[in-house]
Image (cartoon, rainbow, N blue to C red; front, side, top):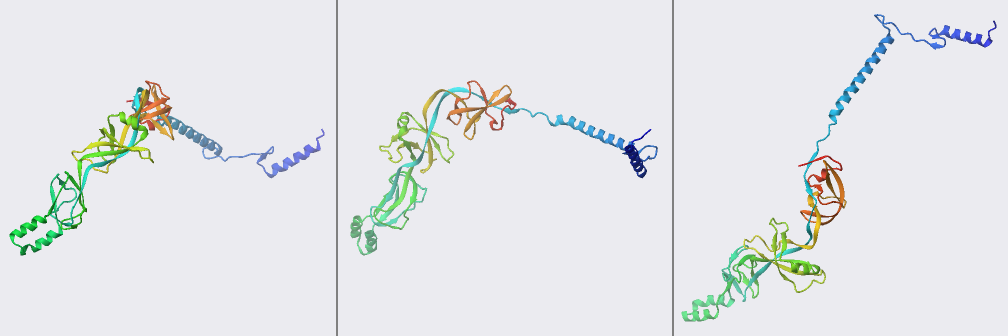
Length: 352
């Protein structure tokens, strides 16, 4: 039988390889594993180790999957309060600023040159109308007093009747606001000595834009709120409108009477004068706490079953207590009035 030359050559090369490396059999390297004590091969031990490791991994994953539902419990619903979308008459509120001023005050001055004596008033002292508060001694009277010792009784009476001391009386009842002169000072004719004011009767002045004159003329009172002073608002009537208009600001002065028997108020206090503008009849309104604003966009959370739905709205008049809704809501719907800023669209809630 003839054997091809190439086959013989290949067999010779294979024989040389196997002879040089006995681990090769049919061109494939044969790996032998040593036998451990007890007749167990090292290869079998490695397979057991792999099986144990795989079992531990599977067990760990199973335990994680069992604990995960406990960690992912649902949060309890948020407890909120709601208000109803209703209808009511609502009007815009116009506000202007004003100031408390004195109605009656007096600067007591000397009608003659002379020395001030018998004067002891201080800031804050109270005086009554007609009360004597000091005396002006003319210069001639001081010279006369020095020459009295050289005159007889008849001469002294005659001269004293010609040059009298000048008493000072308070023209009004009130409180001392400022003292300009003190006892013993020499004053000139017309020079102010003390500033007295009546605090029991004050006035409030405000600048009213001329466009609101017809509206304010129809109102009985304006709401007066004191700025930076803890006092409840007052409702006072308008006593007078100024007879002239400020040409630059196009406003007029209005005056409100402020009775102050307890002297709670002081001139110079700032106030806000408020009055309602045109009334919007039968308007949709919601409680003011329900309204949210984000970058000029208004929204509310509407109650739907046990969840809330975020809804954009267009608003009209805004009051401290209520807001007019032009569009976006229907009468009778319930809106969240508590924790509104902490809610999200679709969140589960529970109404208190």
